[in-house]
Image (cartoon, rainbow, N blue to C red):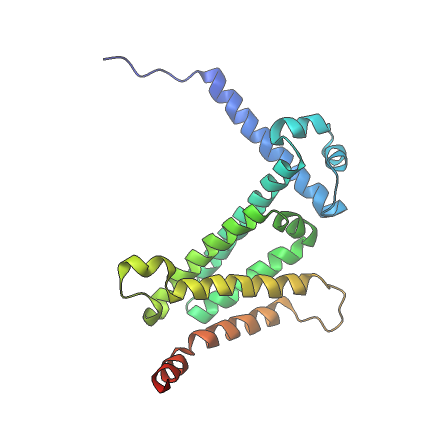
Length: 217
């Protein structure tokens, strides 16, 4: 029996170095986007990072590759914060309120980075799918009648479609909200989050209305 090959320590150290260097470049790019704006050029990003464009091209191939990496890092962080907020809430409405508030606050903390990140369809699709599944499970726990009776249909039951709609609803409202920070009548993040959570929960409570309408037909 052949022995298991021992990993080359030099290769392991080199891979760790590349990962660290890549993460540092992503952070530098994010800082440049935050200051300069979502239309920042590769030249401006490199200058802000104190390096050359060739270094960024070596790690990310092109601007779209860098943009996708920044987007993924931003989305991963936002997703982790949203899940943490949702799991610590005592009720469905509290959970929705806290998650919407976290989303609004994170997006508003750097609209430039948010707009830069959401310009990549792939990244936002992954975010929407992951958050929809998370919300689906939360809804099924609180409102069992939204869960499919047949296990095979659980992947796309009523809770799933509500969750997909909710993610789109929150994102549309949030992007409209962060687009005009100088509006003197702009709602606070807390007030908008409370309104959105209330609208979403009220929609879930409309189950009996839908049932009565179906019976009348």
